[in-house]
Length: 135
Image (cartoon, rainbow, N blue to C red; front, side):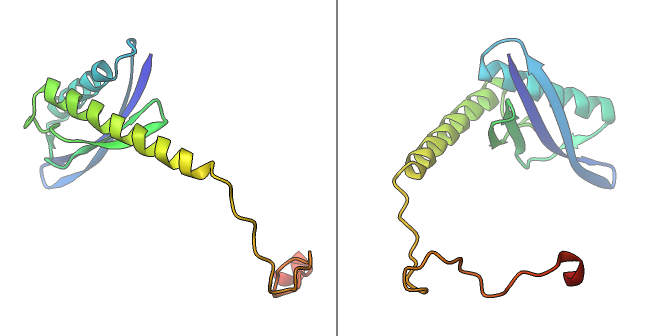
């Protein structure tokens, strides 16, 4: 099961803004979840008389993957093209996250403590005080 959150940017009359849409897809296919999200955006636009802007929507998968840009919600791309674009963007996002995680697991350098001659004293320039007096 895949949960999705999609923000679409719209215009309605003289106003506009962003609208958050949410849903669940019973399959484990990201492409199917994206198709559901796009259909929901199109149905919402029809129901409210809104026009979806050409600005890419923002998609979040399972609350953990993304957000990624989702172009084509305005109808400029087919449903399959939007789904393929989202899959590509999520693969790129996953690769970036993996690279960041690998960099983060490298040995962290020890903090330098040269200012105080290597002592274990804390490096604070001011003394603490009574919290009520500070306020």
